[in-house]
Image (tube, rainbow, N blue to C red):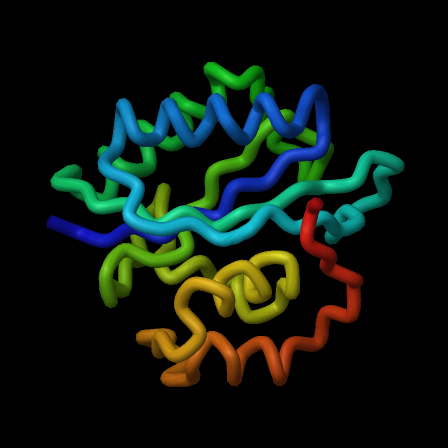
Length: 161
């Protein structure tokens, strides 16, 4: 069994319904959900949008290999109406990013794990610290709390009530 840590993110449509449906689809198609953070709200990162993003970390136990996890995650995004334009960051119904797979370091043409921008994003680190505060990043050799403390991102991240 492998532990996969996902970051869910979306800012279009019925966010509450999208997160519920995404969680159900991940459980059906990828593996058992063994933990999850609260849902957090933040402004868009890397582009301008009037729509607030929601983000949540999910911890999954799976028997799938990493590329199959990626394929299944992208399938879930498509089922939720995600359209990839290929031109930078944009608003979306749902994004399912793989942050970690166990303590693996993967540099594949389709998949880089740990997620290469994790340490630059408070919207990813705050929910991650909630569920895995002391977990060490296998490349940076810092805990999630240490990465958050050093994060250059200053966007406000608030729990969704």
